[in-house]
Image (tube, rainbow, N blue to C red; front, side):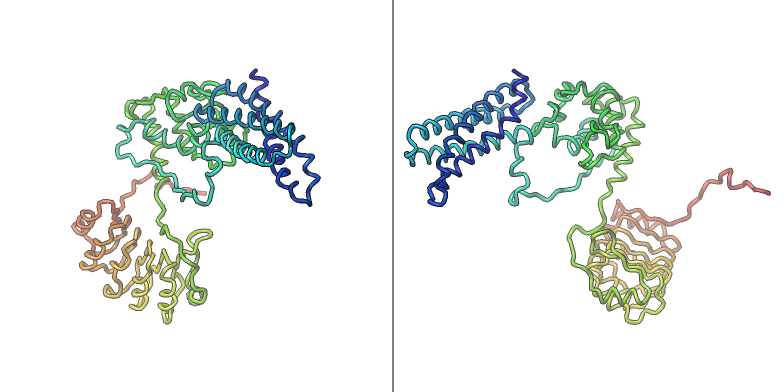
Length: 453
């Protein structure tokens, strides 16, 4: 019976086409232009009915294999039986008396609805419950980027729940969960993972199917996830492998494992890579071409921050004459997210224009001179990076810097900043990293080597 059940995917498409075509022909032949189609309706109905009956039988046989969502399976099964039954009744009615227009029309309408519903439920069994409407215009959702959870103390974290499960959920659940079970495999619960799938045991070390498929070359036909999907990072794969090799415990904390150091090293790599983007989330239009040309002609470097982005990086590297520079910079106030003017003597007009950059995130004025009154840092509250190394930072400027709550990195090497200033800033912004320089690098043996001919 299971052998016959495997013919279900082959047979099921024939009655769908034949019955729907019969319905279309039944409507069309009533026009005098298509009278000849009347004689095609009954043969199509008979063939479609036979196909529906065979599809229902083979569908029952294949359902015995298991691995399907039972609720959807039951609905699909009964819808298929109803389709075969109504198709049979419609065939008999058409054969007995083809002039029963009202009855036949009603039967065709019911039959068409059943074909659509049965097909939809069948697609839900193999492709997921929301397969048909997943990408409908009214059902689209903004895809949020995958972000691993932040863990303050990895030693106290439950390895599976807090580290492994988020990776599996993002990479594997679309094909192996309650929604869909390709290869008769589910990864959304301990009992399912211990059961494994069609290919065998899942958690038997590196030879188990989970590790084996993850570690195969991406171009291998057994590699998972499939090559057409987004691939996990190497650290994600190694973290899953480390969990499996540690015994695949679903409740153990990281600190209790023998390979805890290895697990934490992979997790630290993933955490470092998960740093959120510093760019604004909202889109902006392209910058004024005349302003970009004016800055470029004056010696500035103007370039997009990344491919297909209207946000710009502006570097005053080669500018010597600042006359007329402020105006084009002001016209790009929505596009400039990073501005550099290192080692320059900036007039107040330029610093005022910098203060008006609405989306500025990174600012480097290292070793430059400017009037403290010429720039108001509180006007650029979204700064995440600020380099004032080698500048004449005045005491009252620290009050402005304290208002930059989103600032993550601040360079003050070679300024008048003191430890008290730094402590005050960090008290108001604990996440802020302040670099005062003064590094003491160890002397390496290679630093004293002398090479002679």
